[in-house]
Image (tube, rainbow, N blue to C red; front, side, top):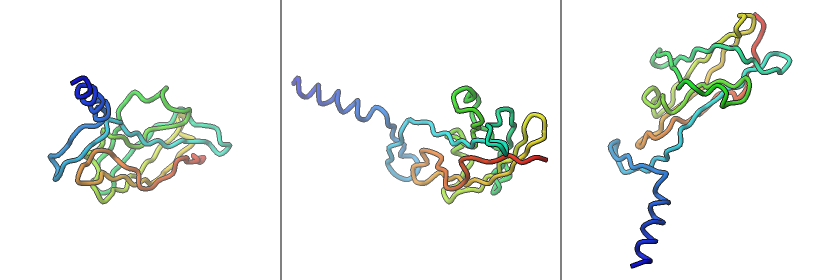
Length: 141
């Protein structure tokens, strides 16, 4: 009996970090991680730009995308959220192009970059980055 209880407890620990999601066409095991995709913005000297504002547009739908607030201070200087798991409903399983544009606080530096994100089926557990830069050099306007 003691082995059975210990075995059940061990199984709970292993299965604890996943959740079943079988409402989209089959049983799936989704992890409870929250995925966040960043881009680091630097000026032409390679110095991180810390005062940029960004817009993110899904080019398939035209929808403006907004990541979850609260990441500032948790990421490196000059790093900005492009997409996160809060946007699962915004992306197709085939992948959508996302145009990210922005400027620094003074409006003297700008950038434009294209990314591609998807939410693979049948589980649709997480956003996945298919393409896009990790670092973008902002240029003088």
